[in-house]
Amino acid sequence: MQIVETSNEGLKRAYSVTIAAADIAARIDGEVKKIAPTLKMPGFRPGKVPANLVRKMHGPALHQEALQTSIREAIDQLVSDKGLRPATQPAVELADGYDQGKDAELAVSLEVLPVIETPSTDGLKLEKLTVPIADAEVDEAVMRIAQGQKTFIDAPEGAVAADGDQIVIDFVGKLDGVAFEGGTAEDSPLELGAGRFIPGFEENLVGVKAGEEKTITVTFPEDYPAEHLKGQAATFDITVKAVKVAGEFVADDDFAKSLGLESIEQLRGLLRGQLEQETAGLTRTQMKRQLLDLLAAGHDFEVPPSMVEAEFEQIWQQLTQEASQEENPEDALKEIEAEKDDYRRIAVRRVRLGLLLSEIGQANGVTISNQEMEMLVRQAAQQYREQDRQRFVEYVRSEPMAAAQLRAPLYEDKVVDFLFDKAEVTEREVTRDELQAAIEADEDGNVAKPEAKEAAPKKKAAPKKKAAAEDAAPAEDAAPADEAPAAPKKKAPAKAPVEAEPAPDAAPAEDAAAPKKKAAPKKKAAPTEDASGE
Image (cartoon, one colour):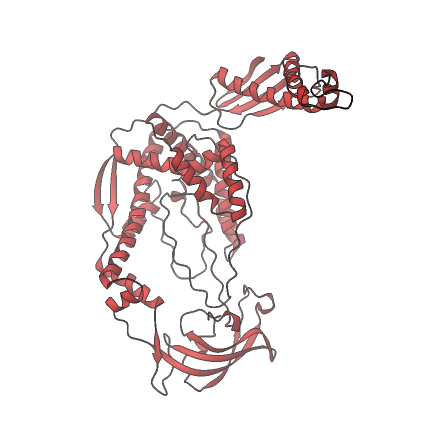
């Protein structure tokens, strides 16, 4: 085999590789000798079929297999002989005009990983911002649970329903005077002010009394899931059968026992633990941001363009997908388009950090055990349907690049933990808002404005700040992995279109990753008989 370097520019390499026709022919001869004893043909005893007949019957297939095997081995030898560390899978082209019996001439191009001086792990200094959990926060958490366990008792006779009260109603929904399917219910409980029915429905029932009959007119939202009701004005004939008020809540042992616990102190302890775990996740994110900023500031080297492009495409795909879900998608897309260069810069940073973390991990013996890897594979398989899980497991086991992609986040975490252990860490107590501001600050110390918590139209398309997007790094070996084939996703069980409770705020990711996808707001729905929640 002949290898000639044809290009060496930066991290890009190109080679001309020639595989001798005699080598390919010898491989074909070996295959013929291997399979001939297993063939059966009329007129010949088993295993006595002449080699020339074997070639005649299976020649093209044998040649193709021999050629492909020769090419794979040639690339492996090229990488080994030249001491290359490929950043991507080499691109291989077979010269035009190749035919059996000729030398195979290949054009091979690839990008290599840069040579990085192993970063020093000495002298790292980090500040750990911690948030003490106040008793008042635990009290609020208890009250949130109490709201979900709220009970109602009959209001005094003649009482007028107010926000926070529950009414029990019969109703019939009509379009143009004709009752529509699913718009009728009996003895349906409705908590006023909970916002679980379509806009205007609950508001029109504030002030009613038991025994009262009332007809209201409301308009279905334009994004209502039932096609025939979108944007339609409907009337509802309503009979109020009862008015109830919330029972008095007492945070005592009896309440805790109603939840299956032994005492209110046990409940408070569990809730405190959850709050501490949440703030610990924020603290880790803040420390990781500091660490990665230190690494990024101290190292500047060329990174493989293909890796940057792959990272950028991943970020951009998420951003555009999220922008398309905004109330004004065109404006959102224009806004992120104006910041495209910033996100490409983030892709460069993330690839560089991935290479740095990989170098630190390899130099200090950070590894993923077989047991840890097996657990990762099994956990990842759970996202697929049951019948597809084993196929996914086998795919990951057979594809090194897919396994590397799966292993990458855990490897990164282990390297980060190694650096945390090596660093000199000082602690400082702060408020939750101060901790969140530190996480959202960009490299210049500017703090992004916190997003409004109210359900108002959002101006920004990017759901996470660019500063946060900078903090995720690629894989253990710093080489991009081909994505595993997408298996059919599990379908979520169909939900009734009523009483869609607001989704809780997403817990902060341990690693400040690329822009994350927002949960789509749940649709408000009209009360329907089959969706009453009963």
